[in-house]
Length: 317
Image 1 (cartoon, one colour):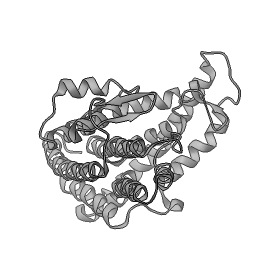
Image 2: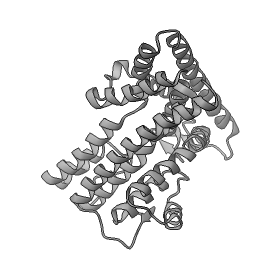
Image 3: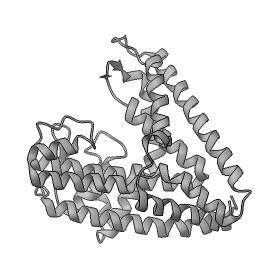
């Protein structure tokens, strides 16, 4: 891939995201991935508790994951291969249009702003709005806990919906971004311990969860370092210590960086507390978090364009 094609694709994808947001569900590739994963869940997930380890469910989940990733990656490669035969600028614009659905920055930003706006109306409105963003039970959360969850989601999904897709696009083009998005979607639908929606995912979803952990490992730390750098620098030892409080090997890094950068406490009741000695966030903390993540996205784009030329210098795509 010519460097200018990749730069145009990356910048145009973010322009489309800013101008238009998400495609309608009917034409959204991630929604297609979700339909495949939902259909396969009826085949691979046990409906009743079975003795552990359940290797049959594990390998069924792994094969279903590989099948979906292979189909998505192959289609992305074929589309990219066809586009790269066109003029560099036109190829970049069309490639950017295909890359855009793998990113979801505007939607994430608007949803977090809407949580804060809903809290200004009432606690129940804030809880209901938060329920659009997280899978946890929200109707028993306090106002502080609703705001903490929204800021955590903003930090975590800065990685999942922006940094990681860009990272894999830089390394492997459109197929890299598509396979990452498939892995992240599979983890969100299958990566649970125990029962969810009548299916036991303890072993059936284990491969999906581990695949997402592997593909998100480096991007999550890049996200944390971006937040730390733009906050004026944070102690790496403190960042690593706080990140270890979460059960996830990856999501704790951007969330811990956000908590330390804002100087607030972020917690999931009964699970973890990040920067636990600090005060709970107020409405101004949400505004500061949004400004900080905006700056992270701007720096990411500049860094991404630079990396495209450095990678092309070492080895043309």
